[in-house]
Image 1 (cartoon, rainbow, N blue to C red):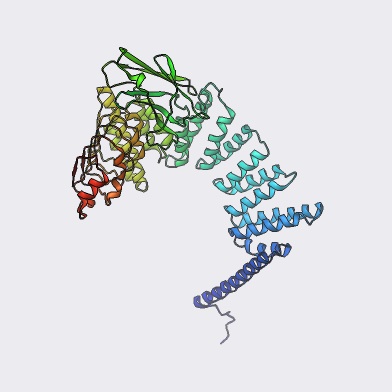
Image 2 (tube, rainbow, N blue to C red; image 1 turned 90 degrees about the vertical axis):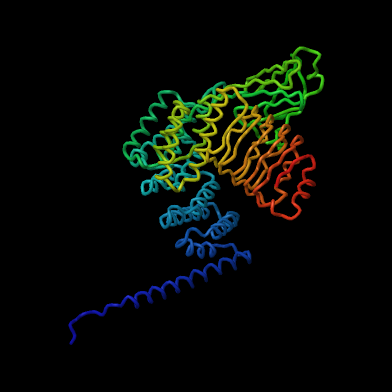
Length: 548
């Protein structure tokens, strides 16, 4: 009986039909791709290559090699076409690019090809490109590929920063969850409010800062869980760069050496930062170097002193270092009969807090609360801060390792403050669950450092800044590398029990520490090697006691 019903394909038939269709498309795709490569290899860079690549890129705009082919063809055609023909070709190319962007608005290759094409035109229409960006950002205001292209267009068209800032206003007002808009504001505001050369760069006028804080607070109340506004809030809090400072000056009679530490890494040299050394009010020409000998930007620099500047014939010697670029100086006195002298600034809570503001990349309100508590009183709120870290790790487990490192920074900074308040040169950091070491340039005068019973995997090269260190305890960690223990002139005892040192070669940096007499390696895997004591005695002949 015919009831007038049409037959309906089964799911198996539909799947088979789709498979055949995919296979047919794949054959066409592979055939066109092969044809393009053959023509390119043969040097046939003509309009047929544009047609073939259009077929492929129109469906898959992320084929980078084919965009390269199109650029090669266009460069070739530039030498062959008349101005009218070239204008028509460029117009067609721009239209094709826009169709590719509709297929994939976040295609790296398409946006890059468009910027390349516009950069070759004698009189590009930047206004049209700004309007194109506005259209695509209307569809997805968080398309960072389009934002990158807009910044390129705005710079080429010399769009005033105030106009671009107003554009970000419109998009942020529509949707606060917009990392790119907030980031663009952080680029535009310093351009709109430049500081005089004599002032620290990066500051914002108070009225501007208050207006921005009000804007970002509106975003918090709208969606407190969105991270983009919190990132921008962190940027606003860190707007004032710390003042340049010469933090510590140390003179050692034994090592005939002067060491100086700074508030930021410097590259000292004849064509970069300049340091002047005055000894007893007379200039002294010296060669500056870093503790690790790499002569790269560093917080700590040192120089050798001639014997005449350290003799005991005078009751005292005065050393003054002048940092000409930072327009700061520091002076210390070496008294007769003393082996060392120093002068240092206190590491204030504000200085440490500013370091954290620039380095912290975090997850919103909880971490902002932690930072603000540290700004108020890092020692008073230490217990609450650690409790907040536990909560934060539970809320954001994906960033647990990062949070552990940040927690380690806070604990080390608190320990430095406590040490300075007590006016001692011994720093106890044992049993603090540390995962990283930071601010080592602040520890220039420390003689004893206890890092035992933590979770450290390495001792960083910055440890070379501890020029006065005599005893280092680092047992019961997970240390695999000793690259940071190099050129420590006073180090005598090094305790490394129960770590993860595998090969004797890992101990090679210790040979650069001339005064080391005791090395304890008990509990490390390398201790199981046959003949290890003889090997170590040959590797470190100056170390009188090696325990395995």
